[in-house]
Image 1 (cartoon, helix red, strand yellow):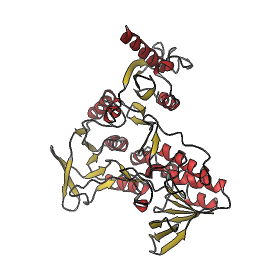
Image 2 (cartoon, rainbow, N blue to C red):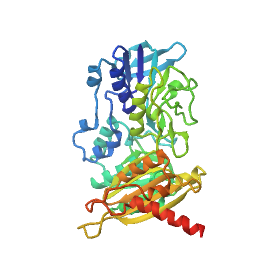
Image 3 (cartoon, helix red, strand yellow):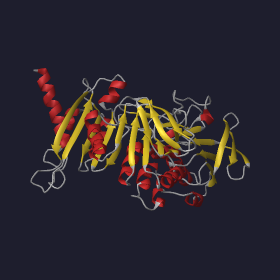
Image 4 (cartoon, rainbow, N blue to C red):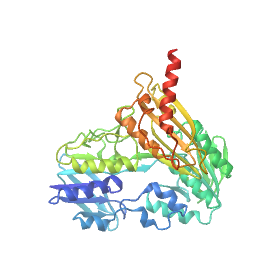
Length: 449
C-alpha cells in the first residue's frame, strides 16, 4: 500500500507517526514545503519574546525521526497537482527545481492553513511580516531587534501574545483590529475588558474598531493608515486570521464555502481514498452539531491520529470539538470552551448565562485570587453549551472540565452537584463550578415563582 501525505506540521506528523506503527509494510511518502516538521506555532510569541531560548524545544519531531520509522521524507517539496482520478501527484523540489511524479493508494491531506493577507495597498513593503511558521518567527526576531515601534494588526490569540512580547521587550506597540474589542471570538466583553486594561496600563495603544486602508513607505513600511487615522511605525505583523490550504483539491472533494475540506466522523473526504486532518479541514463543532472551521493544534493532532486508525476501514469516530483554548497575558490566565454569548448571538442561538465571581480558595489562606466564571446553557434543555474563566490564579483546567460537560451533554443543574475535591491550597468547599450550577438553579426557581 502506497500512502502519500501532503504537509507535516501537527496533523501530518501525528498521522505519519501512527501510520508507520500501524502499517509497517506500507510505503509512506511525505511531501513538506518547509525544511522542518511539527513546529508548535502556539509557542511563536514565547520564542519571539525570549521566554523560549532554545527553539528546538518548539519541535516535537524531526525529519530524521520520521525517517527512522521508515518514512520517505521529501522535504522542501511543493505538491503542484493532484490527479484524484488516476491517483497521481506532481511535485517540485524547491531546492533543485526537479519535478517529481508519484502515485498513491491512500492520500492524507494535512496541508494546514496560511495567514490571511487582506487586499490592502502596500502589503509588499519590507517589514510587513506574517506570523505562522518557524522561519517567519526567526524573521520577526531579526527584524524587531533594532526597531522602536511595532504595529500588530489583528487581536486574536497570536496578535495579543505578540503585543505582550514586544511591550515586554521595550518596544512601543500599537494593536489594531476592525472589531471594537480584542479576542472577541473567544471571550465576552466582561472578560476582554480586563485584558484590554492590562495593555493600556502598560502603555500599549489600542486602536479597536479601526480598519487598515493602506500601508505607506518607500521600500520599508513607515506608517499604517486606518479609516480613523495614521500610525507611524517601523514594523508590522499581520495576524488577521487563517485560511485553509486546499487549492490542490478545489472542485475535487466537498468543502465549506471558505475552502475547508469536509470530512465524515472517520476523517474521510467525499473521495473514499483521500482523508484529511488539521487546519485544512472542518471539524464537527459539538455546541452546534455542525461542521466548522476551528484551526487549533489540539484538533489537528487528534484528527491526524484518527486518520491513521481509520485509513483502511472505519474504526474510531471523531468525537468532535468544543474549540477549547487558553491564554496567558501578563498576570491574567483565561480560557474558554464552546459558545460565548457573542458567538451564540452571531449564530442566532439563544442561550442563558450565569456568571460567578469567587475567590479561588479560602480567604484564610495567604492569598486568594478573584475568579470570574461564566457558563452558558440552552434555556429549554438546560444543557451546558459554553464557558469562560479569568483569574490571576491558574484555574484554567476548569474549562477542560466544562469542555467534557459540553461533550457529554451535562445540564447546568447537574453541574451544581458534580463531585469535586476540596483542599484549601487549591479551592473552596463548594467549587466555583458547583456554584455556577447552583446559581443557575436558583435563577430558574425565581423565574418559576
